[in-house]
Image 1 (tube, rainbow over the protein chains, first blue to last red):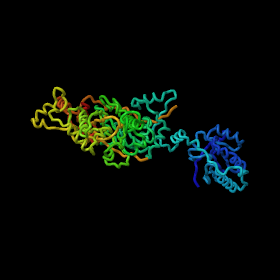
Image 2: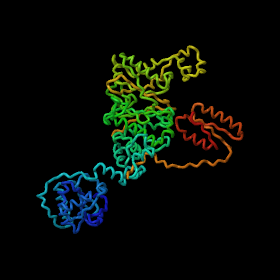
Image 3: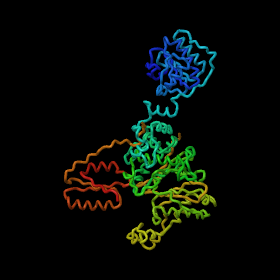
Length: 528
Length: 92
């Protein structure tokens, strides 16, 4: 026989009733606005009349008002205990009221059922009478229906249940609680604490954080990363708190967790990305089935506003870096100008409109995997406009010329990544005469950006580039050598996004790519 | 009253004590190059000046692998063990 939770609850006269008890005990949880509980109340009263000399027969009501209503309505004399804070209901964990528990020795459970099935109620009546060696209760069972469904217990109301979960002794909440006085404005308080990126944030109450944590199967205590510069422990719980503040729904949390895993790798190097005066920030691309499940935007306005998942996933990652890692503007974030991407930058690839393997498949994942890929980018999206080209090589050439603006058009042989977002109309032009694979597009970018080395030498127009002294060591043939924009074609990452109308592609420009700077990192998203 | 959960790493602010100043430079002075461009030039000049003005001290040079990433623990420990003073060249 199972042990059940103990309690001490007051009855309507204020007298404490304690379980376990030395006497046989029947407990029934009810709520006054449940029709089935009202059907059961006279039955329980009859049980009390029959057995209360030698046993406890207790009704437990979920509000004080409810207790009074039931007492008056049914003329009850049995003890009605109050569980107004619902902690006892929560501890028992039933779903439906009436919920009956029969404990013949006053401690261990013998019989439990929920709702009203007449045979069950009759059965327990028999059991009690036999055990106490007395007559069964005086109940005209024929007048009662065979079956009535119960009602959902009050402790399962979402707001109440999340609070109870947060307050329970095995609560998943470990974070420090901050009490904000009722005279204080919560939004203003959070700005004052420096939690915000400058925009309003959602207060991370325990109830909201518990709800957010329901979005993942991972333990709230799991440490996802040590986040620089403070090397703060990015636990699932801390990430959930920042996700609440950013405005995420619980189902977004696995994407936020995977993105944080990605940016906190040594390869991605979030410390350098955040600290550089050049002002880099993570750009997150989401691939796979989760895009549809979260209703992410990969089409019209994919890189812009209006989609909650796009906007808040990127923001949650940035808030976590700020709050858990401690990277703040003027602290270790030393961007000369910064960029709006420092608020948020996350979008989904429009896989259905792409003629190529999606980004995650190109990077070795299965098509059915959901994956987030993080790029460290310093500027973007920078538009590449071409409404005239009608031939595949022409549009590929345009995309190349557009990418030449990375850092400075004059700079070539750049060991720097770019993320090229090709719009559907440009895709259609590329594919007009048949397949045009990504490597061909990359090669075309390199070909059309070929310039002689002498164009890269510092001159009176721009002192940037190769120093005059270095150029003086090269002969004319060497200065005539043609070099492309990118040190390697692999620096050109390509995805498809955008609406069906409009001949506007766009590009993000990277930071220092490689082991000394940042490398793009993909992480699989937990399948919940 | 509203209760919210702390979104930070909850690092307790610690007021750090500065090492007591003896009023003179003795022993080993470490010069740390974080590998920002031209940091080495600044530290070369500093080493020359220290050699001229404080011939009694020993200067040792250190460099981070890259300015973009935090100082490796091994290097930090090594400098702490070997140096009485460290001068670090920050930024450009």
